Image (tube, rainbow, N blue to C red):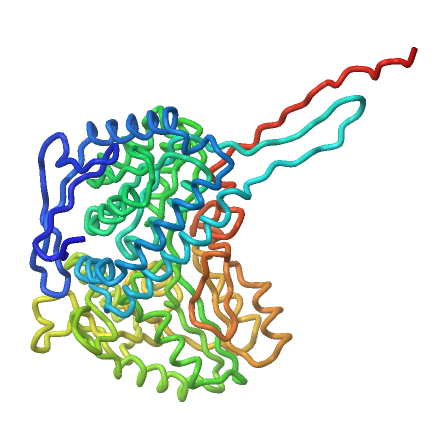
Length: 492
């Protein structure tokens, strides 16, 4: 693969790269400098239709879905190996395009490799059932791929969150059309090139970038679409859900979060402070499951917040490719302004800034979208900084008196993706985890997941789930077959 600098990333349709019907390209920006480092094709409605046609034809005409899954599994294993061999190139592209430190991008690519390996192993294990029914009948089910599946990926983990759904869809035998975010299209196109080298048939994996309101909606409404997977904001998710409902499309949504972290007095406070820093400041806080709300028992509130402040102030900011950088920029000037707006709202609501809350203007940072790691205190519950997703390195902290108040505060937003509990007491850990209205809970742990672990939210955080062995079934339909065997023949 060529070096990422000064590269061009076209659309990928039918196994070939294409500049798109209109030939339009847009700059791809390094958020550490706000300078162009590549150019990417901008897809149109015509390109979306061409990708869907290519995928539908490949689904019908190749034997990708026809065998027992073993071939698909071998192909995905080869793809994982090719990606692992070129991991550094992909990590550098991801860092240039999204801004995160290179060590985080390397971890993301490693996670993608493991995801491909995991679903490769499941490709030939999507099994049906036999069902007992009365009489001389045989009743069974089979799992069949849906056909063409549409995947609309976000910009915060461009490759990881794309492959998280693409891998099980391919393993199940579907043909895929992937729309990466307009801000971060680079690794999706590079991944499609690699998939072709691994043996994925032309047309089985297609990539069309472009505006969601134009390209994304065209994909969802195309009559060949058989399911939609979307990761992104609640507002866009609601729009996609409405479009999908109009056509009765199966839908998986992974939307926003406002993760609560509950710290009880018996917790390992030093370890908890470091993990909380990781949970809100990794990827500059641009995570749906960011640990963005901190609730600390009143008896330890002040000393613990001092620990968290020390973690925040010790982080080294800088361009993601620079050595030793621990937090990079936000993805765009607009995202930086959005985060600063939440800080301003918190102040106007009576909150205080314990640390951060300002743009970083040091030498080498002023031209980028850098925000100092921020900790807010005494912010009222009704403030937007507490109730809404910021998607930036901003932590809102408050105290609680007992477990009941902690749970009430944790469950007080419309989101329910990830919650965290810090305690050494086994009973507290399990009882509080059960009471949290979240799809996932970690105990004495920073936000973490694995390809084999279900990833899902409740309330406005989404519908359905991703990851885990049942994710392959999301991209299949179950068909029931009943055979009347007839009456047994009488003996002469």
